[in-house]
Structures are given as C-alpha cells and as structure tokens.
Length: 298
Image (spheres, rainbow, N blue to C red):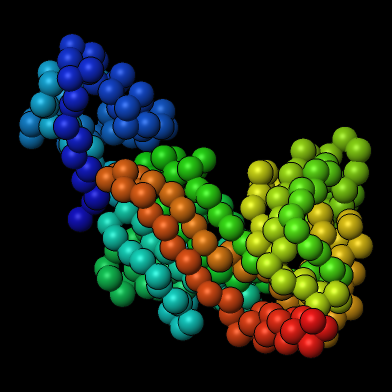
C-alpha cells in the first residue's frame, strides 16, 4: 500500500490555496507536487479530490498519497543489517565499516542499498534507496534512510550528526579546523585542502589522549566528501587506519571514524528523535588502549 499522510489545516491557513499549504507548511517539493496533481487520488480533502488552486478551511483533513516507486537496485541479502529503528517513513541502520553505501563499478550487489532492497522485498514493499547524508565505505555508524521522497526533502537540512574518531597525535581541549577542500584529480575520490576549494569547517573535542593517539568527538558545520579525514590529515594527524591520507597505524584496517549519534525532528510527527550507536569493536579496542596508556602516564 502506498504511504498516505494526513494533515489537519490550522487556522492560519483559512482561505489559503492548497498549493500554499502544501509548499509552505508541509514542505512538499515542486517535483513531488507535480506527480500528486497527475494522480486523481494523489490529493484529497476530507476524502474527496481537491485541486491545488482550491481554498482551504480550518480543520480540513488533507491526504497526500505518496506515488508508488520501484527500486532499481537489485536485492542481495540482509546479513549484517543492524536496524536501530523503523516506522512507515524512516529506517535507521547502524552500518559496519566494511560496506559501501551504493553500487559502483567496484561494488556490485554487496552494498547497503542492495541489503535494504532485499529487506523490503521480504516485506513485499519497494523502496527507492534515499539516505539523508552518506557515509564513506570505511565509516561505521548511523545511516538514516528516507522511505519516500517527501521525507527525504523534509529532512535534507535538519539532521545533526556527531562522530567519534581516533586520530594519530595528541589532542586536548577543543578546537575548529577551517580549511577549504579541493579535489586535485576529478577522476579520483582523493581530496585535500587548498585555495579555491569548497568551504569546510570541522569542530572537535578531545575525549581522551595518551599523547600518541586521541579519541575525539566531532561535529561538522559543512559536509564535504572526506571532510573529517582530510582536515585531520592536513594537521599531520590522520585518522588511525586511514592509509589514503597517510596513517601508519596497523591495528585497524579502515579509517577510525564512526557516526555515533543522530538528532532530528520526525518528518511527519515533528517529534524530536535522538539515536546513538556505540563504538564498534575495532575502534573500541584502540580507545581502551588509549585510556589504559593515559592512566599509566598519570
């Protein structure tokens, strides 16, 4: 069954056209609105068809029927799919640090998108894979999947993320890295800092250090590709395990980066949602070693 959303018209929209309510209050995108207008049952008022030019009355119940969509991503299996939360509008996954998000020429059939396609196939439901933000293949942690186009549009700029990272080098206190990021070779994913690049700001707070490595909590003011990895490498302190950006540690085989928390308003109910994911075992082993070494130093 297609997802149907019901909204009650508040007093401030008395006499307004439906299009004003949908675009200004519900935040329906122009593209989705075009699809809804082409479906006789796409937009209803109190159970009956309504045009976008029709005027509303306080207390009207507007029903928006999401268009049916077909996933173009082939299903694989649901192994290691750690579901943290699910409802009719969102799916929250705790991703492992060894799986790519989307199919690419290097990853066919073994991505998070393939696993989620398989999960919904088992539920006889087709969902287009839309994540609100993305994680690198080597980054573990929370991934929010919007289960329809409206939810993806509403949540696009409302997600607050916090990361945990382990860097080579000592960090104490807190600070900010403000350096533009460029892509030296458009054929490669590698980034670096440089004049004329995209504005990028990373805020960090040290949780613990042993003088050689540090566990940091990180918030992003901008969301550039590889931003955390590039910024700390540019300081001479790449993330542990991140050999693309110069790390020399060998006790973790990926960049030691984890999306640890997500906070956002629910796209339909408006309820404040907050979720956390603990450090995965590979990063926890290093964090425990840092803590032990820190205690011995003291």
